[in-house]
Length: 316
Image (cartoon, rainbow, N blue to C red; front, side):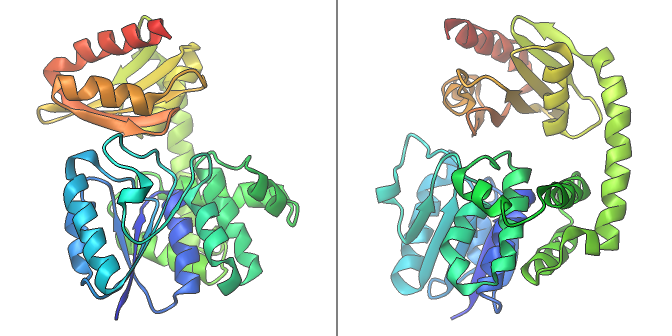
């Protein structure tokens, strides 16, 4: 029986995967994402032990994913650790295996809670890094864990990690090395390559902050940019922040589609629900967290998407 860790490649996924690896040192680490997850699961056999960290369940592949989960849970072992909202098409009871799920907590925190009896207590730092990277550092457990440390140092380390992997989307060997270091209790600042990448990214980000406002357009309660050459997630944050808009949208054309990241600071907005209602009507898909999500639609429907989203925001 082989052990596999399937992890998302962002800060939270890397940290959750590192905690899982610390508790399962023989595991193979495989980076994946919601849209490619069903294909990537083929790497594991039904009789293997599979641990999934921070990978949302894609609605478009949900049936196939649940079937693979059931097959692995029957002949091997399956543990699914995640904090994304469930799709409306499923519930926790329909998912086979051991399910560790909670909204409002990072996957890193959930992985730490599950594996803490098997790992060095020092790895609580990794749970904190992941929580900070996913804006989930205000939970009761993370606040208690922070009391053990000088939080200024941990925010510095988490910043290095988040900045260093920004834009390194498919550089899986780099991320695998970072994850392995974290599992072995080596903080991000011990990785010279990661530190160099973080400094380079921070300089690029400062340039972007100074330039982005000239590219922003405002429509109703939405501020948006199209094809601004920077990270979509960060661009959405600064598009919102620099204009004071309720919602920031960063969009880019990819062939005949528009990919988007959306951000808000309002607890009255639930992007996960809104995007799951709006995007299918426009030939696309979308979802994520209530205040941070992504979407993809045909580019000819982008204006209609902005109109529909504005109408939904107005109704709230």
